[in-house]
Image 1: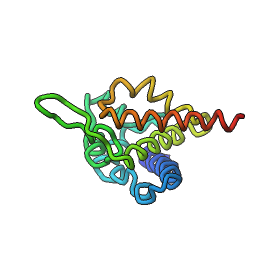
Image 2: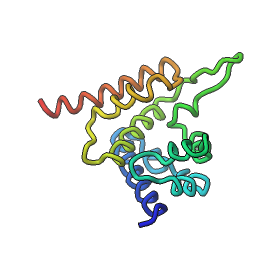
Image 3: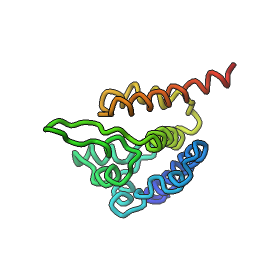
Length: 165
């Protein structure tokens, strides 16, 4: 199977998992339209070219080019990414408070990405672990957004503990 088909399948798996999580939270429209920009030529062609099947092709594109046009397009069109909510005020970069529905969708995106790339190994603890090890220090979030996202990640992480009790 060529990379374009494999990438298409991965996008669909990711959208499926995110959709399920969004629907659980009453985010029906967001569950349907999540990451539709990934099917645009700007994102799809580059991501198919850099597809490796174990992680985001955006990181592979950045490793080769030093930037990713696919990511530039994606973050500008998808409000569930924290970087969409960055602005400059008086010469300082600040995180603008994200509406709750996009913070929730960001959680669903973490879950969907984890399940799409690690279906068998995924647990409810994985998104919090990923956030703490990779994203936490690099994310410029409004304090209220950081608090809400952390609470959502911690609550999800506890689901596994309750299931095992």
